[in-house]
Amino acid sequence: MRYNSCASQRPVETVNYAFFRNLLFMMPTELSHHVSLSAIGLAGSLKLGPLVSREVPMDPVTVMGIEFPNRVGLAAGLDKDAKCIDGFAALGFGFVEVGTVTPRSQPGNPKPRLFRLPEERAIINRMGFNNEGADAMSRRIRHSNFHASGKGVLGVNIGKNFDTPVENALDDYVSCMRRLYRSATYLVVNISSPNTPGLRSLQAGDELPRLLEGLKQEHRRLIEKHGKVVPLVIKIAPDMTDDEIRIVSTRLLEFELDGVIVSNTTVDRESVAGSRYAKEQGGLSGEPLRDKANHALEVVASELKDRIAIIGVGGIMTGEDAAHKIALGADLVQIYTGFIYAGPDLVYDSVMAIRNAQTV
Image (cartoon, rainbow, N blue to C red; front, top):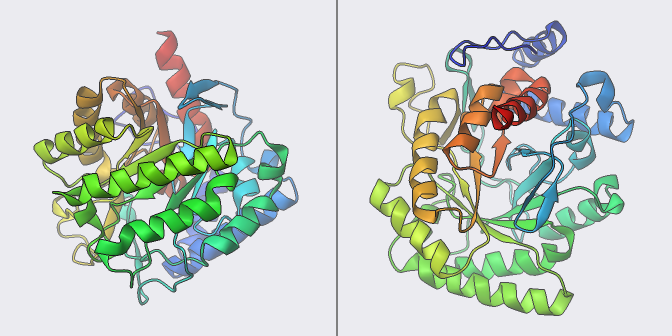
């Protein structure tokens, strides 16, 4: 993929990926998702990554005490069950985040639950944490080359089961932490998905400090038990007010979290009003999320002032989008929907745009 110098212009995609993507877009959305994952997983097992993506240069950075090969990662949601770690790693990602995983397996929400908005370069999903459970994920991670090499950076995104009452959510998070601590490079507590009823309430009022206190207590126990520090990160929503974001940021500092991911998907539909699927429930991601996610990132960065790590995600469709998040205060970035629309070259372009911006 090649980009014009103007950040507002859209990327000129490679013919091969555009052809592949157009074939996938002819399929039902969730089927194309599974076909893509199968292809990426197969490419990883056969070590075919160099045939489908450009070699991404090293641009190492240390964040949360972890050395990342580059600042560009895969966001949670694409590889929910850690089936394709090796495949995604072969595409040049500096780190891979899997999940969201819950203690017990669950089917997620009824289908259809995944919708493409091609004209807006967006996706709406209400998957609902469909996954095979924490134990299955742990086994897959241990059997991956990524894990065996000891060199890959793996984030594990954890959540609560849909039938666990919100007041008992801490129990589910603790269960996942215990089962996956040894397998993860860092852990992410997802309290911001719009697709699990009541989950976002954990960001508000007295719920958040109670949750953070419990998480940190368990985190300290696990550090002592295993003799290593696996950073603990919180993923927040972009739909809070500025004051709410500042309150959450203050709580993260108070309880000494290691990092924050800004942000999850949005339930706001103003940017896609009139689209065929605009009224579908779920989280909106892709280009229409960019401004809202960037604003939340700015507010968080101004409040935290480099005291804990920030991972910027939401609306990265070009390399320039990735570099802009770093300029706004992110230490690392993640891509999701942009990968679906632009392909593996987005990883290369994002790494290069960030590196080039830092040398100017």
